[in-house]
Image 1 (cartoon, rainbow, N blue to C red):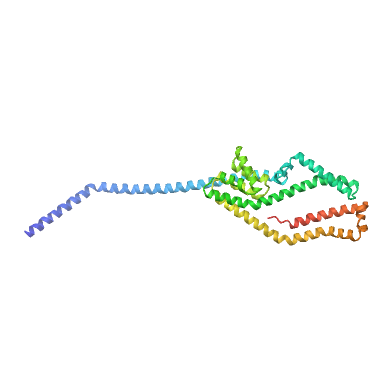
Image 2: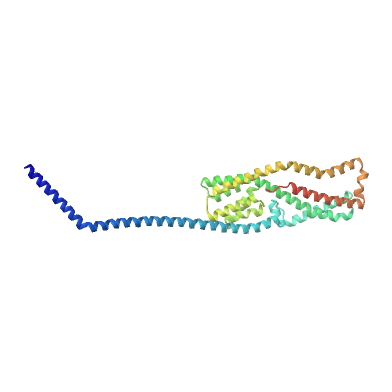
Length: 337
């Protein structure tokens, strides 16, 4: 019985092996074809993945090139505009000068005040003993020199006040943008809460925007009314961000840091140049101090310069040489950075 079971079991195994072998023989081509199809499908998938990766890299490179070209074109356009604005900044007309100085005087009023100033200077010169033929020169100096000097003085003082407050205003705009507010609200906040003259310049941007001018264009115009490189930097940052995109809060934060570093550098330069400036002031004031002391001790000795024609000629020559010396010393101690 046991032997019969082993024979039967062996027979069954042989039958199974035979069926398996026959199945393999019959379906060998189908199995091989399916295997090749799977391999081909895997190759196609891998090629598609590589192609997609290549397309993605190529699209990113094309986008970077396009962005770089856009920034380059924007900078070129801004450079052309800035050249036109620099021309107005270096030699602005009288009306623009008064706007940059923050003066509300009209041109007719300015001419009237200039005429009065010239008349007063000429009258004082004649009353103090100046020859009558010098009266026209004194009138021109009072009518053309003193008013324009006053405008430039007011203009420079206003620029200094603007540079003192401008980094704080940019920091406020950065905080507003990071908190979720749009750029418009940040500019309006500065136009309402900042100190003058920053408040007035940003209010001009808001007013210009209300008549249809975009914020980037209005920001670029700030340098026309506030002739300093910091205002130009602000306009350029806004313009580039509007055309090329980017993180505006980070760009303005970097601008604020640069402005503060420039301010520190200016203070350092001023501290290092104070000795040269003090020497220049002493040398420039020394002739007047000596002349005054000589007048106190020997008035007849120095009055010859004012009472005689040769003395007046010597005074004119001394004034010319003194002016040349002052301009040379000013160039020597006026550091650009």
